[in-house]
Image (cartoon, rainbow, N blue to C red; front, side, top):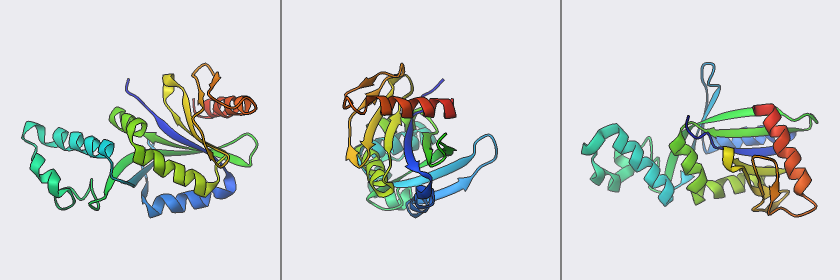
Length: 195
């Protein structure tokens, strides 16, 4: 079985409409047939990780004969992957929204559709920055990258950047002492809702 990494935002329910508006402004949202749910395609500022991801996509489409030279004029030859010279389109990213037990908050999960996309989520500074900006815009309680067995890697917490990690065994690492239990509780509720 492949990797299924996800960016997860823990937000106030009142911010859900702003989230959907922001996603629509930076890509598209499409309802798919069951069991797939909602598919989001997003345009991110281009970085080396996104470029390498799309090089692999093109290679997979064309095999050994892929026209690599066309990548130099990517906007004209691959507009579905590079809508502009400075952006790379990534999708389908599966969108799930689940209400927290408190009722005032919800978890937003944006899950990679493939193992390659999961690695892209892990390695792209541009995608990480995009989610940091989104977290600030939505004033998230927390934003983290769910890396399955590698744990939950928090990037944003209550208005601040963070590097806290909660292991798969729900042990908080590199977290402020007074915040460890709150991070563990967030991960525990996320696990209950999504798994």
